[in-house]
Length: 174
Image (cartoon, rainbow, N blue to C red; front, side, top):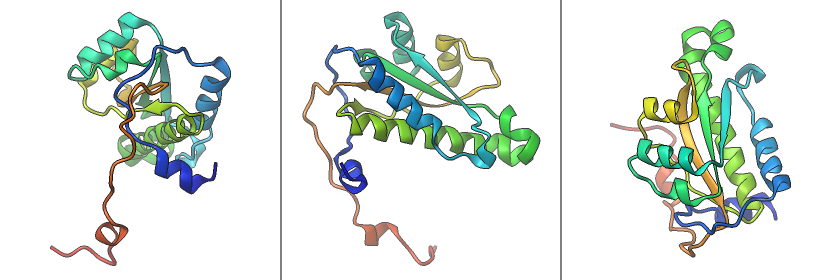
């Protein structure tokens, strides 16, 4: 599938079949995340793989009861790891670049899952401390996104997007 078609067919899946992911497919998704660009190639992020039903349920509670997380056979939790960037880039590296790194890695994982015929739903609304607790992450880690992955059980499909001319500007005016 070409890239243009891939990004046009991706949509947020909010219902999943219980079909387990093939390990080779999961590995391809993780490899894609690992190949994402990052500031200084420092990869200032960590990914927690969650398959356990109890831990997924804890993530549901941490994310304002977004049950989509528990439905998917796998959830990936992306964390910014500020310490990996701080030495080279200081405060900006810790506060911004690490978050960007984790975000880009999550996007690559999302697109790799789509290419494999799987669905995802980017979850960004959650209580940071509750997410850390659910997966055993330290206070130094900043949760950025939870990405449930699985075979779609819905047929919601792609929604209309803004026209490019409405979101691209030569300059913003106030």
